[in-house]
Image (cartoon, rainbow, N blue to C red; front, top):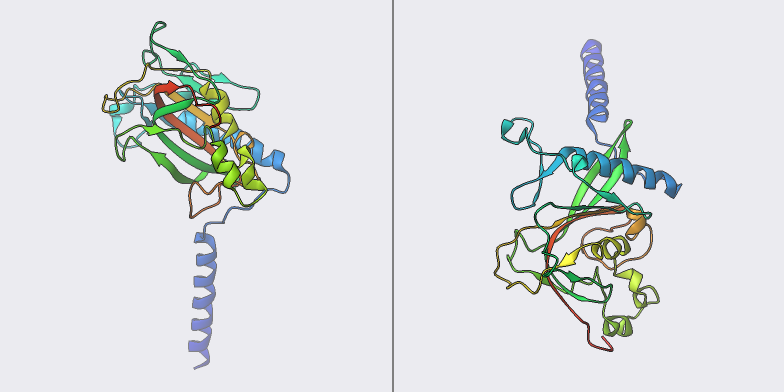
Length: 248
């Protein structure tokens, strides 16, 4: 009987140890925000090493089992620009409007966008820095197939701010993603393409959390999760722009 008890005890200890080894450590927010900033920059570069653009400009992850994408160019190997804020943007060659057709984008424009927007959380797991989770924010490409008009993460209307009931929600920074606004103005808009026009995505904007919401209060774009410390990746085409009416 004594031996049976010892065997059960040893077995339970072994199970407990194995379970502990298999558990995935949850995200722990670094106390120093500069550490999170470093994680963001490293994870963004890793993301750029692991993804490419397909024939329509969609971001795709390299397959480890299918050799058909072996000759695709990594995002990191494409021409890209890094802004002082840490935002990176990539203009896809051959997908931009012509000089005559392209329209300058201003920070208060009404935009029509074919867009896929995801948020990613960067963390250090056993010395490996990468994105450990992803959240969908908006996706017209795989969703309705119709462009999105006037997203609040680019510009929030004055009427929304006036109707807000908290001090935080009365600020444009509660809704707008600063790094996205900044980089979007580096692109040109097409001259109001029809909404049913086949898309040909112009490029990618990668926004580290410090140029998004960082650790500030923000609008719940994903109602289930906080976007605190999350970086953003935008894959898009600007179908058109329009002047915003006065007072809007």
